[in-house]
Image 1 (cartoon, one colour):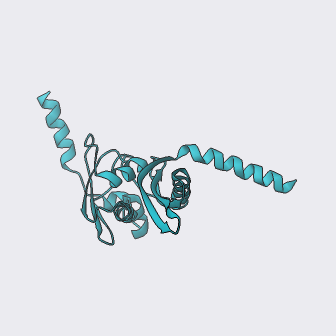
Image 2: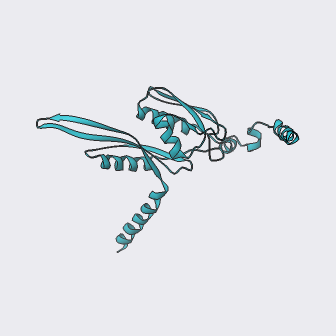
Length: 193
């Protein structure tokens, strides 16, 4: 009886967890194996999963049928999620480069209203992460697997001012650059209006 309660309780927790994640199918690859009677087809799926609030992960799955491959990829992506600090919940804190194999990506912070300027697989990662403004460029491999791994590699290097201050034993105000010109600009705007 105790075992039944654990199984039921575990299932309930899993069902509640699933809706908070959005997933995006990035690539699907059909591969064939030639055998005595003809060809056997298999499918490989690449999926990006995120909560659109700063967590993202990717996974790949292989199976004889497409839905099964997507399901396996989604499960793997949920297990491999990383948390990325975002500035104001919309953009990156600082510019960052990512690498994986021949894949190289450059990601830059952007002002409000810029939108997601990214191609293909990188766009899927940013949308699932919840970034609204970013400028990025893929330099090198256009293979979606390498592009996503390079993007995730760059995002793991992202650090918030709070985490840097904590690591150095300082206050956040000591680390951020002083903005002395900000009050003057707002005064000029008020005079012009």
